[in-house]
Image (tube, rainbow, N blue to C red):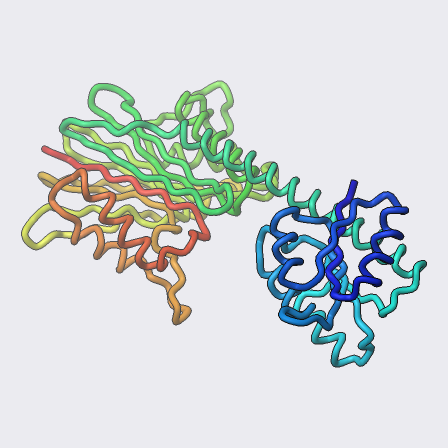
Amino acid sequence: MSQILIIDDDPTIRLTLQKFLKSQGYHVILAKDGEEGLAKAKEIHPSLIICDWMMPIIDGLEVCRQVKSNPDLANIYLILLTARDQEGDLVKGLEMGADDFLSKPPRINELRARVRAGLRLYQATEEIQRQKQLIEQELMQASLYVRSLLPEPIEGDIAIQSSFLPSTQLGGDSFDYFWLDDENLALYLLDVSGHGVGSALLSVSVLNIMRSRSLSRRGASNESTNFFSPSEVLNDLNSTFQMSVHNEMYFTIWYGVYNSRTHSLTYSSGGHPPAVLISNEEIPKIKLLKTSGLPIGMMPDITYNEQKCEIDTSSRLYLFSDGVYEISQEDDSIWGLNSLIDAFIRTPSDRASRIEHILSCVKGASNNRPFEDDLSLLEVEFHI
């Protein structure tokens, strides 16, 4: 049974409305003024309020304002009862939050119709809110699932730690690292275009096919990809994940293979931000590691290139998605890659504190606002 709250300082109007609405099957609660009405609204959360405009202490406009500014009450359908019919008065009432108006004294047929219409809108709004909560719960579960697939930190001569901060929407970031043999470590980070379940599913699909090493050679489905060759991996990913057959979604990726015997890193990238290699010297040397190439899936038959670099003693390598540095500032500028690299350089020597330091810089750049994109960050420390 829908609950209707009547707020009116006129006892005759209160009793007349109560008698009629009860006859229509509604549960009716009465309040003699705005102060009592607000207290009862917070207590019972009615579906609909009929409130007189002109009342002592707290008038109808203030009741409207307080109800609509309270998140717990804002969905209540609110009808102002008034003898005013000037356009300026009606506009003022709407601006303060009134959903509808009834002339005073109300005509029975009009009252019946407006109450029914108001309750339909209230119920529709409540259903939308319920569906929204269900979707948010499902997105949270999906986000937790994606997080559960990400690799654990590793220690040793090569130490890797990471951070994944999903945005307000489910996104498409993922990363992984695994040993191809006793000497070669593969590592990558990818970022699928867009947000939502579709992006996350594509991201997980790529992660699973990479982790199982079930990727096939371009044009030769019976031959497996050579995961020691970054350019071949990107070529075969591009052949497998064309956006024309994956809901027009593409992704950027940086993929590298580190050889612990030769201390060399071979890498290739497709539309992804450069990896940043920093030597731990008094005056750090910075290298941006990137190759030319479009994002994966944008165009067929693209050939990706690879490059090789030497890894100095005690170096750090950072992989990240563009959400880590493409952060809007109050002056409409972007925080930017150079600011992020500066945060990399100024990290504390204690490895356990470095990721937290970088994230604190990123959160500071966003003024602690919710992130518009996923943030993925991978730090690889080499002790050679």
